[in-house]
Image 1 (cartoon, helix red, strand yellow):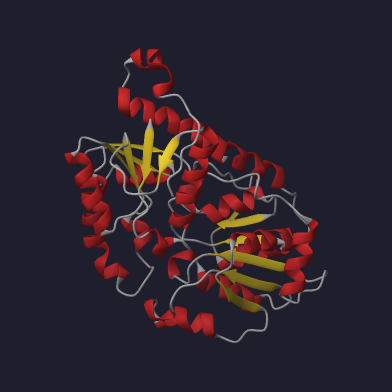
Image 2: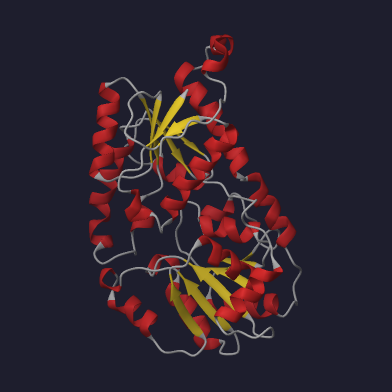
Length: 354
């Protein structure tokens, strides 16, 4: 069994959640010992596609002509396209039609959460849709005292400073407006937003937020995974105010890092994160402000171990096991005869061609 992880135009998304999801898929296959390539190669059993660019559509069509199975990862929905870039709301209906066309090219559609699966089931999509987390690398995201010290030194925070971080593109949907407003309301705390978006692509109100001069509001831009791990280590709270997600890989990272987390109470997290069980949830600015103070000052119980248990369930190792089962079922259906075919479908020594 060989998988072609199609990587066309992935460089454009390398700094996004989709880029991270693609890397997680590679890691999952490597840990499971499933042979894969990222090079053009129709000598494969399954073509796995993560993007909705025209080149991906072309590859899916060619794969179908050559009788290859196609898995389409549904990372995007119309709902999370809205309130992102200039003109996104006006184009949302067209975007929905496009992703419906793309996803229907797959023999199977994988989306990260039950919530996004339910959204897609209301679309004009005729193919089977299942949900599978993007996963988290628990070996990489671990607490480290040196990382904490490095983060605070780099950004000139003292050991007594209370630091609240978030991560994502500079877009309205991610909750950047509320993040900035909370910084203005709470000048005694340091607020740091990691991530980057070309300001020419976002509305003026978002551009003005990024360029505003608040002494406790910081926008360092895009940082590497190693640097973000240091930031998780060195912060007192991960504040995730997104209005819409298909999963939120940075949230999985924060759960894995065992730091306190406060999120907006939105439908996607109803299914797997409970308020005051694994994370704290809020809905209004005044509630966020109150909860930030209580969490940072240690006035409410720590939920970090419970949160880590959620991340552990979504480990890349578990993702690899599930993907193997998905591949086998896609290739052989419910016909148990594949078990007699031996090493043809068993995880094998990894052969990478990237």
